[in-house]
Image (cartoon, rainbow, N blue to C red; front, side, top):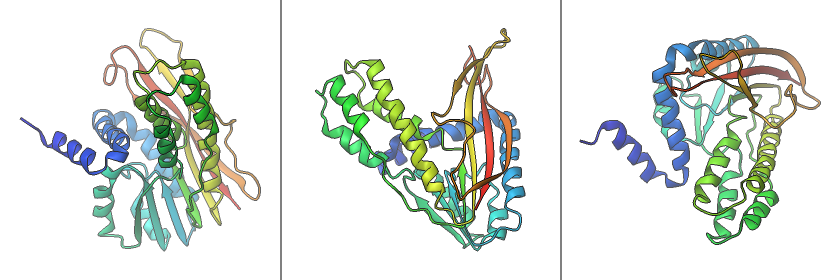
Length: 285
């Protein structure tokens, strides 16, 4: 018997095949939240609290990048403070969540789009090299890719914990498109690392379009643990140098940090658990 979640998944996959990976990730986040809600609550509350505190007295237009299912942002608060609030995300499964809220807040504007401006172009370029391309040809193409600009003009721009996710989506898309081919993993990884830095740097440039304030929430480290060991395996979530910063004329006004127990051992994986180290930064002109 086909269940409703299965039908929903298939419907989005058929309706938006070009963003099937974002559908998979979005529905996966939704399912993970249901399983791990009590472990996520502190992270979600910390994010909302930080945004609440630094947007007090703000006005004008606000853009929320990576708005998702609105789990970590208080939309009613933003709509009280801003004349216009724009939501951005490429995942098509978020639209029903947004539209339900838009009924109460007509100043919401919905944009289901690629905020990197690059993934569609890059994917098309990768398709052009063909299934028979060598590992060197694929790596050369990846290394040659340049980012595209996207306009997200607003008085305040909020980047909602997506900076570290941009390259993950791209990496998984490349691995899916090249699966089953005899490619040099080290060569491919080096090229993808270059793509990661380019996407992260381009995202910071998008944030610099803000005419007043920027709120940047991002993972900085991924920690992997096991219950029977006091040692954690730690990997950087970003290729950019830490702490994250925007160039002049922006000034760092406030920061906060916390742990997000995103995947407790025994709920997601039996053998290990995952904790993200998150930072929140508030910049103003």
